[in-house]
Image (cartoon, rainbow, N blue to C red; front, side, top):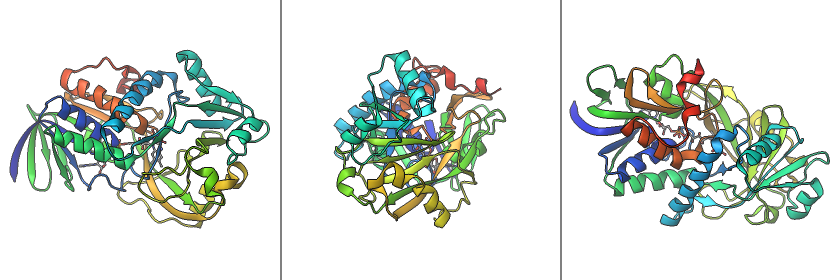
Length: 381
Ligand SMILES: Cc1cc2nc3c(=O)[nH]c(=O)nc-3n(C[C@H](O)[C@H](O)[C@H](O)COP(=O)(O)OP(=O)(O)OC[C@H]3O[C@@H](n4cnc5c(N)ncnc54)[C@H](O)[C@@H]3O)c2cc1C
């Protein structure tokens, strides 16, 4: 076996790991980023053309300062890169006044003094003829929202990290993480890697590496679809923002305008945020059947008639749910030089760059000024 040494090893080069890798490398650290697949790839959580960025955080107002900083960092990343990463489209969250996506967004806005508009259904139809809100609904509109492209972002983070001197290894699985000895040892099929510090950002595969009974993670199967839309013109960027309709308790249907410069189908993308079907990330069913198509298209005709049509393409993606659906970012209880960053529960992508900063601080200095205390493992009891 080859013997290697690095100051910091980042396991996983998805959205979170690649951002941490870039940040550590920019700080002049000898960092190795390692991924079992050829990142960016389609097997984890950071693929599928688009992700929602928003600031008025309906899941919990404590995320707002992180989202604000993240937006600054996304804009800066976009300015430094040719490839498109962030499209500033705005976002419209529609539902009963007391549903989570509306009431939670209002709460976060009030607590953090965020600019927003509350729109009646007629006004929504007038501004964005693609959308057809129910008559008794209200729309929370946030101009700061936008569409992130996960593939282009991961590529940009990796490129910047390598340009700053970091090393990446793709198609190389970490098979063992030994963190109880004097140093930290990682094994792959061919190498033994000695590290001073480690970040585990392995998405749905994190449990097997961190082996922490307090941090229970569940991977779930999620669907993304692109439709052969009835009226493409109404769905182009500039004519419609990102939309979300609360349609069931704990679930909402959402979709994206057609944005230029992103990889994948040139069509509106639709999805539904919900817990999803528990799965094993290694054996999850990747094929799409008629029930999946019906699930993706449910209520679309009613809410976004312009986007209605059969699926042109669909794919599977993974959520990694923590017990309370909030992230877990903390030092490992058996070795403080190992930091875990997992449990992103289907809403982590927008925070990648700010998490890059916070996790780099945590692994190098043992603490961070970024307000991530509410994401510690202690809360999980
Ligand atoms: C359908 C869907 C929609 C989403 N929508 C949004 C949204 O609109 N907004 C938002 O903010 N978030 C959204 N999310 C969530 C967001 O995409 C995830 O929180 C984020 O991508 C998680 O990134 P990650 O780096 O933790 O995981 P991943 O991207 O899965 O990366 C983990 C990496 O670790 C690697 N790895 C695992 N084990 C090993 C090992 N043993 N050795 C080496 N490498 C290993 C994997 O290959 C993988 O590349 C969505 C997620 C999905 C699935």
